[in-house]
Length: 333
Image (tube, rainbow, N blue to C red; front, side):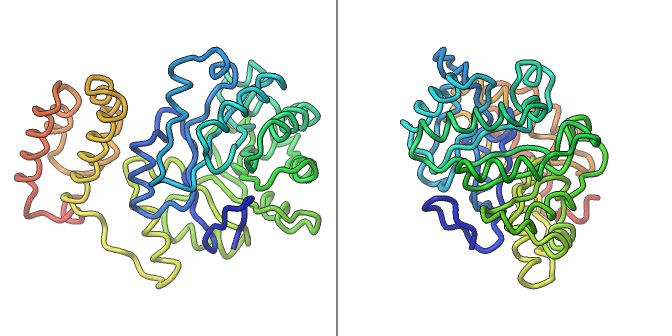
């Protein structure tokens, strides 16, 4: 079983990826209910934490029911990363994760995220600064390299392990690929098969079905896998994969009742955490994913994304439940 510090994970754990504007406490709560084994916060700017930026501080919120959970930070300055690690430690997560994989231009231009892949020495210095500043286990999430001509994940893995990193998650794309093209897990398997590597190695990229999860589990021999975009609006994927691993069979698809319950809970928990107005507004981006492919749903989606007020939205959900009461999701595609 993979171990990160004192955290003992189940055999071949499924991790929820840290996704900006997605992996907040309400969404993590849903994924935990549906089988996620380890979760991370949205990535948090080290500079923002030091400035006491409200948005960055709010991302530090974690709850006991979602443990084990890690806080992920990013930045390109050693002192800022060290200070932010100390701040993170005060909220008692189970681990600190460093983001060396975000490909977004505004992050990369600051010499952070995947931008650090161009300078492994800097990556090592930033990671050392965090490790020296906290007693929590430190893990890293990164990519294969900057582009296909500079894939350096083998060197990165060895050097990070040598300074005390306790687990590595690799998104099987380069920064140049962003989120497009084919993810190549063979590079991650090579890292895992390196006899020098003893820390857990997790793979990330393109896991969107139980069949693919099992194929990649068997083919690449990693310690676990991280799931990101496939869980948005579909938290059931974690338990579906676990069931398929055990039985080779599929769980029944979530019914309309299941989808309504998940979306409604997500909304309620968002309002509780963010306040009614912000919770309602920020939840609007999720409805398309919860009800993707449902025939005749366009009118209801429009109402969900335009209705203000908690009670009015609950009424819309009640109406949807009544209209779709006798339908199974599989009938609607």
